[in-house]
Image 1 (cartoon, rainbow over the protein chains, first blue to last red):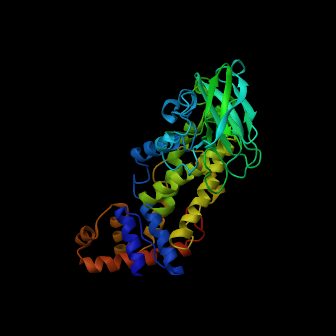
Image 2: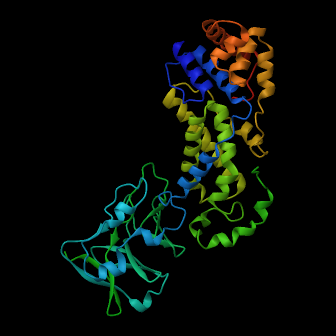
Image 3: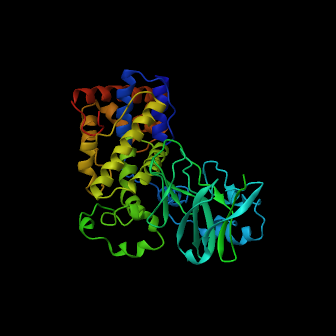
Length: 215
Length: 200
């Protein structure tokens, strides 16, 4: 009875009502209180700030519909890797917004070698090539002149990804979808999955190379 | 206001083409139905919010549940297409989001979304406060003072002190009156037969 009164008072004041042990008789009164409260003229329109704010949240790359803001995303890739500072790695982690599930960010073996994956001429801007470098398989792309390489294995259960529509990586097992920079575009899994690990990549002597474990 | 526009089904909107460059990821939403997730969102956020508000009666919960619906629904939605499917999917999501809200908070399913009933309304432009007829009927069935206290507090935003002043009674009495009025009104509703707004 006390709980019911407090709940109703919260409704009347526009606060979030606190829960309480509900009995059958309370349920009817509650339902009615909600109906009466909802009938107050003009009170059922959403606040503009709420609508705008949710709009923004939905637009965030974690929920992934807008294209990745490339510049902000990552400092790795071509320029960085070409200096040989491969181990640098996860600057992008700090820059990633919101609640991305934890991922390794970058795969950078301690002892590795540059493995050729494509002729530079075969990788024009916007192209995607899959590669198999023995210990690692993945995809390499060139976007606005910058090289990127990501692992080609789904971070959910390890299925091999394939290119979809030239701009996405699709997992055939549970339909997860990744962007070419490894970000999760969407999935239908109960828990979030990490982005695809990125690989160090460079262009040397007309050949695109990925840094992989020498083991 | 935003409305469902059946014509969009046949003809992609004028911005269907322009939306293809920077927002290509969204081509998952069939261009013939909505031009993208933003169109879906803007066209439906008011409806979903109002629906939720009518089921929970308070803004903080209504906002959270609305956000939950869109956050959960927009991803899978982008793979599917027509306006009808989008609408059905949003409603189905809203129903389960509301059900789990009640499970989580009170352990009783106080209100529910009856998809078929709501779907019929969903296509029409939203109007504010459409339940008044039913509410008016319930209130009319109450003794005068009971009706007054509920009107003042629920419909006219009077504080308990103001309502007590208006009725010329003490605050303590106003509280008791309000509580009894609510209980009695709940009985009226039970006798009023199957409820046509609250779903169950």
